[in-house]
Image (cartoon, rainbow, N blue to C red):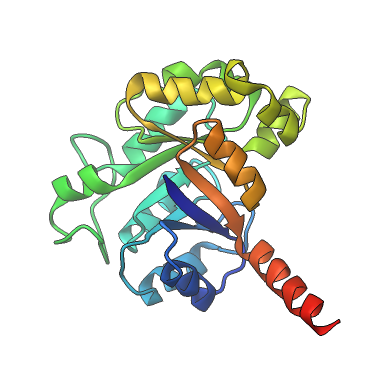
Length: 235
């Protein structure tokens, strides 16, 4: 099991604190968060190295943004709204150097050893594709089978909207439902299944559903919970 946090606020000390707390990974959210390209690069320059992985959710399936995040030292990228084999193949190509992909060579920092060691980078980098629409769910088995896809990651809020339900409804459907289908597709091809939970309670339910790479909270949720705890002690 690997627990992570999504960082929406472009706060480098906050990300460093999350890593120091012992989380397995932190995602700098460039899609819905305040992490634009410049702030992502500055954060990756400033953050200390350690056992926790730093991932970047890019704004879209954009080869340039993916390459820049990896060149700055990200351990991997999370690509939103992947709905087809072709899109999954494009994500893999953007993440890996030839002959496995088409990533342009120009690393500034690397967590995998010598910058010139492209084989080490290809082997270690994470290519995470998000399943968060009905179209993506329909193609999930084929997407999971794309060579180089390392992890399927469910965006449950978009997926539930696309399916006309809500997150609790998805979690209640069990192994026969959409979430179970994603977990099964990942297991069938020997890759991992992850999901955004956002709260500890929902994270436990995601773990029970078979996900092993889970965003258990967000930086904004942690601040809210922490301040609520402080205020409760003052009243």
